Image (tube, rainbow, N blue to C red):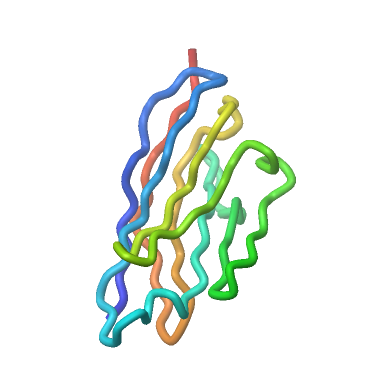
Length: 119
């Protein structure tokens, strides 16, 4: 069973940077990670819904929410089965829980990692 685990959340000042990491595991075939689409979702404090922040498809195509274009970059490391979210020029509205999702033969989502952007 494929699993993902997020890490890297922290308290950061506005304008700062942070890199979130998503470790994927449970693959049974070599290079299987490369067949999965990976995505990061954001859940703001007190909000029930999660919104898509960025995704990277197995094709390598990427998609970003308008609110993060030019500031966030989604990356994947095929050698270590990891997906990263590089977050630059952070804003207070970026505060919240960030979840990693993996979609392929199986689907998996993690427990999230918390980001606080505040001075």
